[in-house]
Image (tube, rainbow, N blue to C red; front, side, top):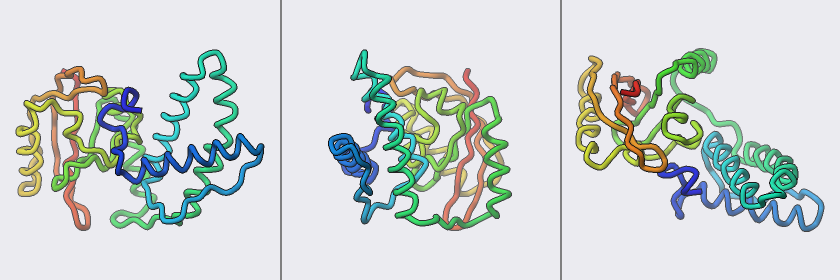
Length: 216
């Protein structure tokens, strides 16, 4: 998982790691018995989009390890992943969200997804990635949804950390957009020069820095 996701790989103590452990147990039991009983998901509260991305990455890794039997492994895992995702969604219940109405929010997200340049929404207090578009995932070599909830600094070279934190801090105090040149690093650690435009976006309880990234 680390080789596939880099800094986006779940920490050993993260809830997503527990979700993956429970999926492995569920899959092993289902394949052994030839039936699909309900997975044990009591007490799990995880971000659905991120979990889905991690399950896909784990399934791809399992198929890769299987070598010549990769297709058979994928065929066996696909219905189990679907059942597990459905159970996780129903266990957690519907996630209520604050802010703009859902229809408006979906329209905004759809517009961002169509942008050719990479886009990251970063929580200015924690540095966590709140959202990203497919172009950001492609730039960093990680599925877009796997980036959610991950420390943005994990994809920033150490020498650039102070500069990025300065820009995030500035967004808590001003509304004008800022532009700066910096760098990111993909999942394998390769440095990528980027031209950044950052804009402040305040929601209930937090401030997001909306960062548009153009590959330099």
